[in-house]
Image (cartoon, rainbow, N blue to C red):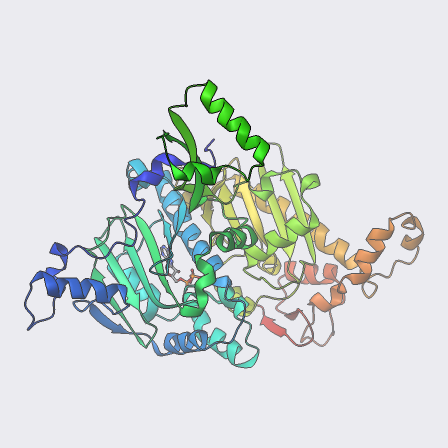
Length: 545
Ligand SMILES: Nc1ncnc2c1ncn2[C@@H]1O[C@H](COP(=O)(O)OP(=O)(O)OP(=O)(O)O)[C@@H](O)[C@H]1O
């Protein structure tokens, strides 16, 4: 077990993180027409810490939609700027998941020494107002930096821009796959330094003014592997240089990150130093004393020889672990609170509103095929449900094998008609060191799928039974009289089932009025149209293929 603090690691790169570039290395960066003497180099180095882009870098324009998105973020009056940290940590965690997955079939990819540590590190430079977040994840090649951070807009980009223009809840940014850009809520200049196993170390930088620059990174300490995001904070974002603020945010937002998160934090330690005769600082250490005490001290010092050393408080830095990594699905369902399930759902769905999931099912399957799973019925349909219905590469279920994240594009686990569910499966039976293709054909997948469907339908049926609109079974009431008051309240607060899922058909025989009807139609392969609605406002129409 790793302790909460890592001293050894701390020494390795204590203050190198935001060093200005080395003069010798910077010669290539000096613009034409200027002499390459050290004055020029110094000026360059200084201007870099003053947020001007490297002059020798390749410049790129942001794709138009991305540029619009950045404008919106930069000019946003949205008050909850905290969310940027959640998005950056979530990206770091994804990158760590990727390298860990690759290492299953090729150990070499992890490298050696510190490179093998799958962790996230946060550092502050109060003087230069820089917040840095570093991961030892998969990293990005030069091409990745150019594509992922600016030139190729994701499908969610315009959807998000549109959404921002109407309702404007920036909190949703992660759901649209453009979370990275939220850094511009707090920073006006951002550097992304990255090292991928297949390429040299590169730095991406932008002031969000329509352009970004990419250059080989010869100035900074080599990362080994992974990515460091340096946020040059805006004047008004000074609070993110406070250790306590960052600790609170990590607690609040990154509780379910499955990698250790460390903060380079100040710590007061007791240090033994030689006690010289008239050391004035000695007095400061002493509490205010009464006359009587002083007399006593004097007596003491006359009687005994003075101690040779004394203890003083000194400020040092060390890596402080901010999260404890205990996967919620490994715990007993009895021990997990409703609040924890809700928060876990929010982090899975990247939906940080205050709505609770409609229902959940957390279970442990034993026998020939062992796995743990948590399934959620979302409180509303995800914005891209329609799109993902046709995209076979998307699944709302994350697959883990023995705690290792394998994929969220594994659509063999649930049938299409249940793909509005969200959740996670962690299998002990599936092999770890085989390719995805082999996993897809593994015999235990069928069993997992069967059990997941049964549990999912049980969960939805229960929800239906609790909904007055769906329940036609009046006698049932009597047998349930004993149910606790708490349950009654919960039920009263719940949205009726029919508001979450409404199944309809274009066929002349009209509406599908129950889940059972829906399922039997789906199973018999009827090509109906059905709707999944979160609220009457947000209706999604999904024609079945
Ligand atoms: N720390 C990182 N390490 C490696 N790649 C990264 C890192 N941060 C971002 N990326 C790359 O940049 C892409 C864009 O990030 P962005 O946050 O905008 O979207 P996303 O991660 O796909 O979705 P989400 O916003 O939901 O996290 C990512 O998909 C990933 O490929």
